[in-house]
Length: 45
Image (cartoon, rainbow, N blue to C red; front, top):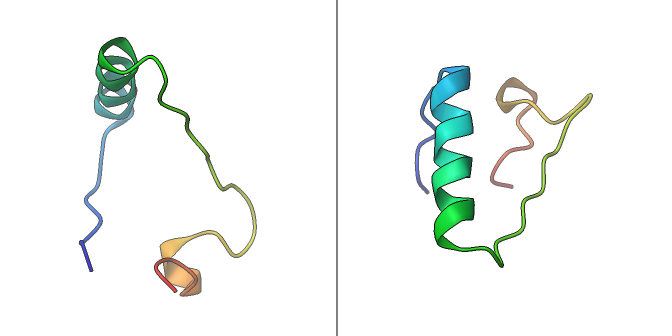
């Protein structure tokens, strides 16, 4: 299982921007809210 790494906000935005400019058919999904954090134990299950 790949390990998550911490990203600063600008690095996060830059990675999405670079990916989007290179792959315009890429889609993204963001999970927000209760139970979606790494500490909740629901990631990678």
